[in-house]
Image 1 (tube, one colour):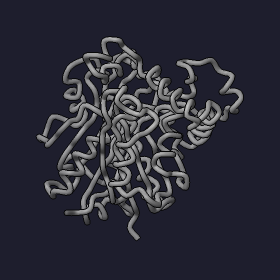
Image 2 (cartoon, rainbow, N blue to C red):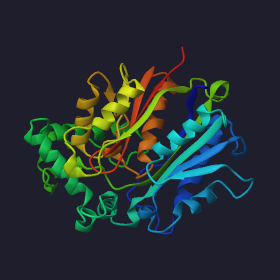
Image 3 (tube, rainbow, N blue to C red):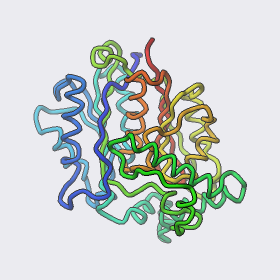
Image 4 (cartoon, one colour):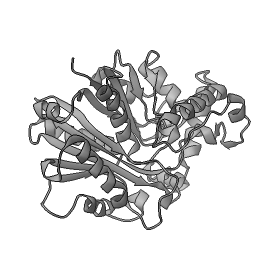
Length: 350
């Protein structure tokens, strides 16, 4: 099977709210133009298109079909869609490339969280018979997970605040970040609780935004990018959807995915951790003590739903493209309390 690499990436600024009438088309068209410019590709060169988004978030059925307008109506294309973060759309495109069906694929994800009440929308991911009718919001569920870890001595409110402070400081170098700054730990700990023990800085912001990644196979990748980010491992696993059936202070699916993808020796890791304690949990479980974590600021600095996981792959790949790292890891999650996890390991070519 051919090797597959990330050869292009673009993302929109993460913002709290886009225009009320805007949709995925307005978010995506500039990003398509950017990756065309960066790679020298045209629409006719793309053999497969795959996207990730959610009708629940958009509040209307088949919302992804309207986003296809960003590609254009002619000529006909080969296209697919997943109803989750676009990191899983990248997995589908990667399979098509590995099978040799195409040599270039474009993956995109977009989300307009400002259109609804995100904490309630995400309750629709839960068990529809026993949990969703209770409408437990996503932040309160994460608060239960954080409290369990604190009771076991796995992390503290101070350690969580340290993650938030580092994230906002790192995000100052990320022009697409929504939240930046240099707050002190004491300033953060003085803030009121949002869902005990979580404060606002422990939670990823509500963001609108989009991301695009271009994949290519074999020599085509070498033609399009001076230093392609070769995907050396890509796996995704899932834990039980029943929160009561899981140990919420462990992420066995993430550990299994990282082990299968071959995560040893990574220098940079972009983790999709929407809550500060979840970054600590992933670091502990994946053994990433030696890696630089979320130099972009991570999703705590900007979290466009259904694009944030894909953006982690693109941001990690940039370190290979620019030569600042030789081996990187990107992680994406979906579902409550890190239920579903995807790990992508990439490396440069000497």
